[in-house]
Image (cartoon, rainbow over all chains, first blue to last red):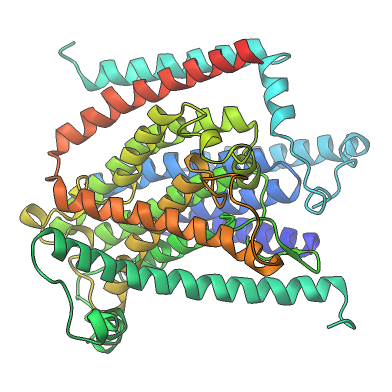
Amino acid sequence: MQLALFIIFGALALGGALNLLFQRHPINSALSLVVVMMSLAVLYWSLGAEFLAAAQVIVYSGAIMVLFVFVIMLLNAGEEEHTTGSRAAYTVGIPGAAAIFCLLSFVFLSERNALSTSAIGGDLGNGVDNIAAVSAMLFTKQLLPFEVTSILILVAILGAVVLARKEL
Amino acid sequence: MSHLTNFEVFLLLSVLKVGVVLVITLMSVAYTVLLERKLLGRMQNRWGPSRVGPFGLLQPIVDGAKLFLKEDLMPLAVERPLFLLAPVIALACALVSVAVVPFGAVTRVRGVDIFELANVNIGLLVILGITSIGVYGITLSGWSSNNKYSLLGALRSTAQVISYELALGLSLVGVVLRAQSLNLRTIVDSQSAHGMLSWNIFGGFQFVAFFIYLMAAYAETNRAPFDMAEAETELVAGYHTEYSSMKFAMFFMAEYANMITVSCVATLLFFGGASSPFGHLIPAIGGHIMQAILPVLWFVAKVFAFLSLYIWVRATLPRFRYDQLMSFGWKFLLPLAMANIIITSFVLAIRG
C-alpha cells in the first residue's frame, strides 16, 4: 500500500510540475503548483514526517499559494504569449539543469547507506509521534539557526510594511 | 464474519463507517438549514417553514429535490474548468475534515474503532490544513465567474479567512500545550478526568482562547456577523452570484458542513468532546451498548448547542464593516491569542 501511495502521488507531483510548465495561463500554473505541494505533503507523510506534511499543506498550499492566486487575480494577468525564448535559456539553462540533476543523483547515490534506513512508508503502520522530537531538536540543538530565521522573516515583514506604507 | 482476515474486516468496517458518517453529515447539513430557518423565524416572531410535512420537517428534502431539478445555467464568459471545479473543492474540503473527528468513546469492534474514521497523530493540524485548502473553492469561484461582484466577494472572503486563520490557529495552541498532543483523541482524554471541571474552558482556564476561537471560527466559515463575502446589500450574493442549481447547492452545503466541523472542533477542544459533563457522578447504567451510545449523544448535544449559538448570533448581530473586521482580527484577536499562549505556557512551566 505504501508503494502504491508513493507511485500515485509521485506521478501526480511529476504531472503537476509538467503541467505547471506547459500551461499558458498563470492561474492554471499556480494551481498545478498547489497539486505538486499537496502530493509532496502526502509523500512526506508516507515517510513518517507527518508534521512536515501538515506544515507543507498549511503554510505552502494554504497560505503562500493562496496569496499567489490572489495576486494573479488582482493583476488580472492574461495568457502568456508563446515565444521561442532567449538564447541564454538554451545555452545555460539545459546544461545547468543537467548538472544539478547529476550532482543531486551523485550525492544521493553515494550517501545511499546513510539514507536507506528509512523505508518508504515504513512509519505509516506503527504511527510514531515525532512532533516532540522535531520541536526538541528545533529548540535545543538548532536554536540559533531557528531564531536567526525568525528574525530574518521579521525583517522581511517590516520591509513589506515600509514599502506598503510610504507615508510612515 | 469469522472467516475474514483482519485486513478484510478493517476494510469492510472502514467503508461502512465512511458511508454512514457521510450520510449522517449530509443529513445533518440539510437539517441544520431547517434548524436555522425555524430558529431565525422564532427569533423574528414568525413561524419559519411549516407547510411541508409535520412542523415543516420534510422541507430540506423538498429543497434538495428542487435544487436538483433546477436548470443548470452556465454563463458564457466563465472560465469553464475552474468554474466547475470550485464548488467541488469547497464541498469536498468541508466534508473531509469530519474524517478525523472522534465522536464517541473508544469502542472497538474486532479491533476497529467504530466512532472515529481515522485516528491521526496530527488530527488538529489536518483539520487546519483542510480548512486552509477550502479557501481555494471560494477564491476560484469568484475569479472564474468573470463577474465583478463575485470577484470582490471572493477577495474579501480570502483576505478574511487568511487573516483569521492566524488567530484561530494560535488560539488552539493553549489547548495543545495542555494536552501535549495534536491527536484529537488525546486532547479529549486530557479533559475527561473530572467531568465538566476538567474541560479546557473551565478547569483548563482556556476561556480566552475559546472566545478567540469562537470569533475566528465565525469569520472562517463566512457566517454572520462576518459574512462580508456575501453581503447581499453590496455584492448581490458574493462569490456564488453566477452559480445555479446543484453547483449553488454545493456551496450552500459546504457552508453548513463547515459550521458543523467548526462546532465539532470547539466541542472536542474546549468542551471535552464526547465525555459527559458529570464525569463519574452518574452511575454507569445500561449495558455495554448503552455505554457506547451515551457519549455519542453527549457529543451531538454539544454540537447542537454550538449550531444554535451560531444561529442566535446571526439573528442578533449586524454585519461588521470590512475595515472593522480586519482591524478586529489583526489588532485585537491576534495579540490576545499570543498573550494567552505566553500566560498558559508560563503557568504550565511553573506547575510542571
